[in-house]
Length: 577
Image (cartoon, one colour):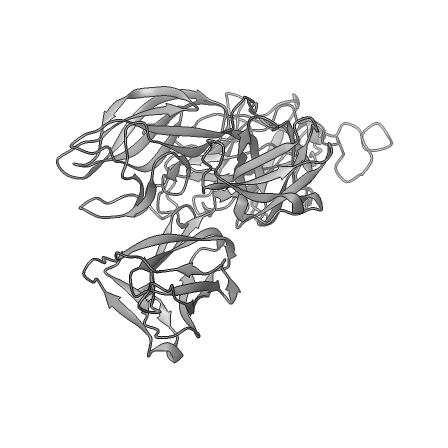
């Protein structure tokens, strides 16, 4: 059976599996399915043991790759299986398959219904994609070269750390020995309440010196970094570094009243292990009475949504792409976008991004449309893509999602290239780059792509406990405020959508829309005490790829109109929420 080894995979749109996990362990309770693009038949019909096609001097009567079993989607809720439809081999006598690069080879036959069922070991790692190779044997006893597909587990376990926000309390970090005289832990003070009840204080009396805090990253990946900086009358100006590299410019900590603010530190690829946050005292505001610097916590958010203005574009023309702040009546996700003006048709720029593990990802952008903004062509790692949704134009600037499909990505750096297809409308504006691993659940605090009101990430509090220990909070909110949450659908077809929302004495009434179309009834978020409820928004016929759930504040409740969202849960047809 050596023919099964060393076969190169043929091009697939995707092959994937649904698995609902009940705990952090790899306990498989759901359905495994495989799907192959029926239009992709471009691979060569080579023969086993010979590079020449049949009929050109090669062996005759060999079942070629094009005649191997073609997978299709079948939901099997009882067994942990991949289900194939053997097609194109009417005289097939047997099949054999291997799961994983080093897995054992198994021989099998189709069942009484004509389907080929491949058992999947329950011991497989449910965080990565796996290859499965299937061969068919013709009536003369010759095996085909085999076809390779990849499948992945859609783990609905919200404990997956690569899809959660990690909040690292500064007081729990290791402080450097040389700074003990000025670097210390400070508990809650009058007018100042910290996330974990304490902060790290650089009690400096003059500029100068670098003070470091060591922290550990458990799950490697690309992250959006932010920290909570303390403000007050005795606080000075500071700058920050990560592993010795500067993180933007200086930040002034002076304020008339005690408080804090979130400081965005950009996108960073972090390996698992120890890293170092550096704090440099640069001076003070003339109105400040001191040089103190306070850090409450460091926050690492998985970069499913990447602010385009935080990405350094590649390419000669990419040097002309620049950060543009909110203007002209449009408000971008992070208060800015990456703006590019083409000089000629074909001018392009490239956005690099990283993924940590081999898996299937939904890729897309959030882009600006309006006057002078024209057609865009896309390529991923050099392969031309087709935008799956039209980009509307109009007389005013606005943003719209662009779906670029689902792709199998290997670990490492990848390149999304945007090319101007028109010089009549030369502008390209990118608000967000979206790269979503396929999952059964998405934490709202990680997938928020747009908000018209003030939003933030709230940690467990007030007797409430959220699935990822955080929720997306709109506060203070007013009727009409909106928040958009992105999510990925792995397959065309009907799916049920649930959203976990928080009820609270200060929360108002909200309504929902999917891709701009209203769904469900108006939800009353007011309750006498904090609770989290899963709200069913119905079953909808989705296309595969990225979609958008919009929450809009309808009216006040209990005197305020705030709102909170925990997560989105997606179920394919046949699975019960």
